[in-house]
Length: 359
Image 1 (cartoon, rainbow, N blue to C red):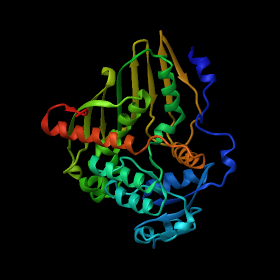
Image 2 (image 1 turned 135 degrees about the vertical axis):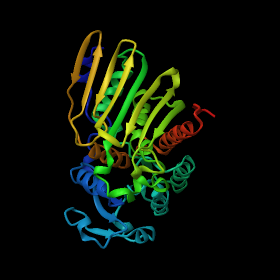
Image 3 (image 1 turned 120 degrees about the vertical axis):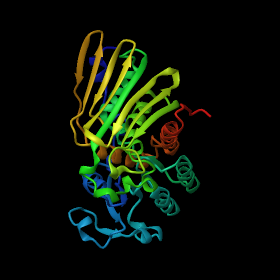
Image 4 (image 1 turned 180 degrees about the vertical axis):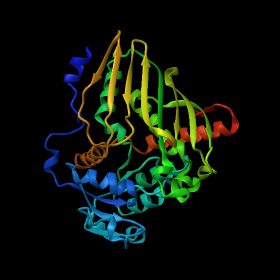
């Protein structure tokens, strides 16, 4: 199949069921009112097709500025949330608190019978990530991990192109992401710089993007991991500032790359195959123009696609799954896989040896 003929058949929302938007929207409680929630999540939901925000949950609920410029009508604190206050005003929760607090907040939601969209990484350790998954399973609530790139049309098109064999058999992948974190966080006291709250700064925060997107594109899991981390600036003391990694996947495919919280903003993922290559350019930053470039038999094509809001796609996809009684992907077990693989990078840095993920 040619690239052009294939793309003519691709829909931006290949998951959407006709008529689903005629149903009542899913009402969300936003748990954690940091800048990501207020500047990305809530605005995305305001323009969504299948959901709305009705409750804000925060440790600083007394601050009216958190919701004064939104459509959110009710705000409660974490204690009131766990006690079930306002539980009749929402159907599902979005958990966007520091990583080490995810389990407690997801447990509170599950105890109330609320479905959960939990930010990545889902927790700070494989053990806690598995417990989070079990909490939702035991409560019978739906859990999805918030990998927004998986609902981006660019990534979904790239996956379909790979499945169709447009670049032949994948051989290797190179990915990376970098930003200047100290320029936009509130000093060295920010939770991402606290290993107890973050579980690790660079690999957990941005290394997870090339890792998970590779798993999504190839529909394979890593079987071994190796990595090195480095810290230069005192603000990152006790955690990682730069990281390089190598993951071996099933069929011998290698993902290599690096991430940094002290470099210019950049992100990419390149899949090299036996007959060509595919590049996702700047796929990991919401609001940035993204490109999908395909090279095959000496021809280079830049694929045009709708530059949709990644957060809006993510929320609408999850809400659509709830409305249509469909199991969402990625689920908790998928999220556990990333936490385990990232822990292996830190282990490899300590031991200097490759870590077998099949053990």
